[in-house]
Length: 86
Length: 391
Image 1 (cartoon, rainbow over the protein chains, first blue to last red):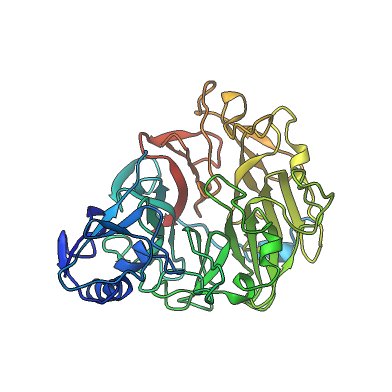
Image 2 (cartoon, rainbow over the protein chains, first blue to last red; image 1 turned 90 degrees about the vertical axis):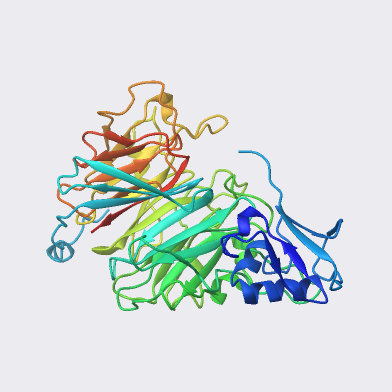
């Protein structure tokens, strides 16, 4: 499925804003992303498997709150960097 | 207090003679500032990791070309970058410092940022230590590529009491483990500082720890003379006199001479109108009796700026018995910056170069051991750390 990658993480994807990854859950998708782009997962997900405070992950239009969210092949996943201030 | 032994002084290494590169970590990236041989002309380069919060960037003194950089971005989690060519190219750690995953139903710890980097003992070429916020100690045995927690501290049942629980206490950016000092005579003998928590010592390479805070004030705690809970701002062990340790604490400037167990408040000899509160502690590389501090205002609501808006370093050349103000070249008034705990350092030249970075984004140098200060860079982001690397 397509995964939209925010500018903050494109150092890992060679500058690509849209990448392909596979998984039946968000956890599996992120593991696959990390195989393809080593190191990208830990910048988004902490060691307790929590989505970091200033990262939001949407499956289609719905914000995922944890990594257990189920996915199907035609879902679109959007990763957003969400932080304001100086 | 004891004077440094003649034996220790006889081991004094020769001073360095080459150019100096300042490794500057800021809230928005890292910068290098390289001198000529005379340390009169300085050239700024960078930024590296623009937009990243760079807490510390450190040269490995064992190979003089490997750099580690502790960084995170506002949106992204913490990591460590590594360069083996003095900053020309960088690679991210394959396994950055991280706490273990908690058992189901239990709350685990998560590294917010890597705060402090320390090269290991000279006999352990690829070993590094890292301190984090929340307080955690990590070790790499492969030059910073992969990191593992030091379980003797991180999983110690006393860790939580030592740091006052997991509440968000301590510095504005979170409680932190820093000031990792290694005894040059014994790679297994370690000291760490925690803000807040205190000084802790290990004699078995981090497998076990004990508090070492006797004599230190912790006047923000209700307990008089507690065993731990103190707020260490910066602690330095002298490499030529490893039983001599200096500490800039939240409550004053201290010195201990091991195997002594109590710290002496050498800051009592500072001028009363300036006080002995500050963040950094800088040692002379060849004279264990010479040290520099940079006082800040710790009165009323703790402004944490230069007292009276008149910034100055203070030097002691007698192990803290007396202090001399050093303000030539610095703003004589209306100078309200702060110098953070990692943002002041010394080089290995003769005379020693002393350096600091200010929260206002200026880098100041003194090639005369603090007698005269010159500003060599302005308009940088808020400066978090400055390390002097001889090349």
